[in-house]
Structures are given as structure tokens and as C-alpha cells.
Length: 85
Image 1: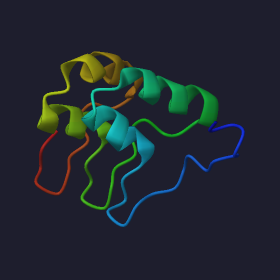
Image 2: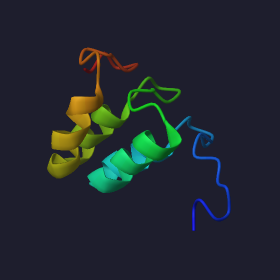
Image 3: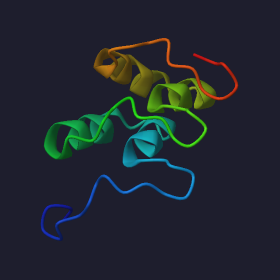
Image 4: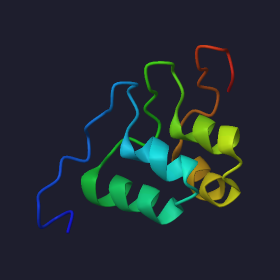
């Protein structure tokens, strides 16, 4: 359905979150990989607070997604506005 309706997977919400943030938060590594592979959505883009999808995995305890997502990051020490990596 996503391809059929030609979605824009690069849209951000008012907080600057992408589909990658929600895939990470929801412990959905398949969605994360799908959007990265098919739509080339950046895996390590921060929102307006500097939080990346990897931060969101850690915040929410999404261990399965974390195990996949960590492989897509080039830099693991990206800090959010609170200084968390």
C-alpha cells in the first residue's frame, strides 16, 4: 500500500520525528529496515531534541529493534539535548 499510494517516507512531524523513530519506539525492526532499504530514510537522523531512533530504542526498552538498529549507525556517540548517547 505504501508504494501504491507513493508515500513520502521522509516527512517529519512537529517534533522532528521520522518513521524511523516510531519503528524504533514500537520495537519494529522490520519496519526500520524496510524504510531504510526501500525509501533510504536516514537511520541516525535526530529529531528537534537531537534524539535518534537509537535513543528511542533505549528510552523505551525496545531490545529487538535495538539489536537491528545499532548495525545501521556510523556513530554511536550522538548526543541528544540532555547529553545522552
